[in-house]
Length: 268
Image (cartoon, helix red, strand yellow):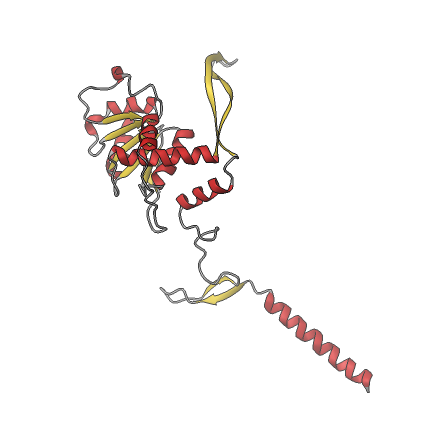
């Protein structure tokens, strides 16, 4: 009799276990997402939308500050200074520019965060107001990142513009975005001056290269722009620190202009 009971119970137990294991392996659950009628499925572990991969973090400003506090002495930004450049002619007759660069010079997370906070305060002291947009028009470099994060700490929306854009595309991007401050390198500053008469909203320009703002031979003296160097802005911020005005998760962080395959730049 006992053997009979065991023979009956064992299949029942295995069936019960198998059914439960199948339930656990379900990857999706139906959820009500509103809007148009239909059947929506989400991962069974995340039936509510996941807005951040980091708990308690809802903005790029918060994420950067957290990273700097967790890794203060680790390397973050590396720069190699240009020592010299030379032109070589290839076998097919093409001229190729060869750059000789120095060793990497590093900024740690802590030093970068200090520079970001100083730049954020300096930008506000310079007169850039809440609701106005900052355009970064330069090649990717250390100062590009510091400027971006500095704007985030003041809740200034950033407009990124390719340094390779021509005059028409550059003018279109700055005017459509209504940027009042432009951050650029010395090469890009010369391009800005050339189209200054076509720019409607620009009030101030911050040059990433220290030597450029003092070289007035490249700058039209009739300009009403306030032109200064990034180092001077950081110095202003260090001497006159301001509490950050951090954004919310719903605020606009970046407006990107890409070259587009045809016509004027596209916004992303």
